[in-house]
Amino acid sequence: MPVLFEANQSAPQKTAKRTKPPVSNISKRSSPLTAYAYKPLDIRFETQEVDEDVILFLRQHIVVMIPSFLLFIAMLLGPMIVFPLFMNLLELPIQIPAGYVVVGTVLWYLASFGFLFTQFLHWFFNIFIVTNRRIIDIDFVNLLYKELSEAPIARIQDMSYQTKGILGTMFNYGSVFIQTAGEVPNFVFESVPKPSAVMDVVSDLLHATKGVE
Image (cartoon, rainbow, N blue to C red; front, side):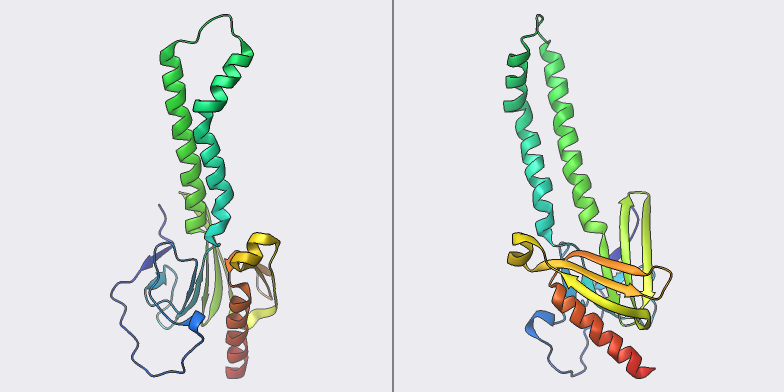
């Protein structure tokens, strides 16, 4: 499995005094299922440079896994409810051997768990990172292939965000659209938590970068 990021348990605590950020943006250690982390103290990634700090660590909101989980539940009920009804409707002239039924049921459950596990891997390893120097989009395709796109903060030209649907409004997640002047002109942080806060953080970094220049 490719290493996309890893926890740095030995990361030193920052003792410098700083202005207290908003409550939602307090630096803290992340958990394995973290979808939004502002200045995480224990996250690093494989192309991170020595003087580069992670400002935002993002995944899609965990709510996006609900459709996959509901489909998984329906697949679990298939051998117990759907298949018997289907077989009764067919009225086959011969009876299927019990061994075939057992093997078929086992294979069906394996496929069901494999489906859910694959969906979870895509959620877990598709991550978005904002550092003090660049934005990074890591797309997990499969266990042997991933795609990384990045652009310097200074090349950001325009930003917007979009929140759609009842779930997006209730759980405060949406997509952040970033246009850049780099080789990859458009970045989409899809279905991430707190999209307005994400855009504010990136906007502050952009203004700070241009101020330095």
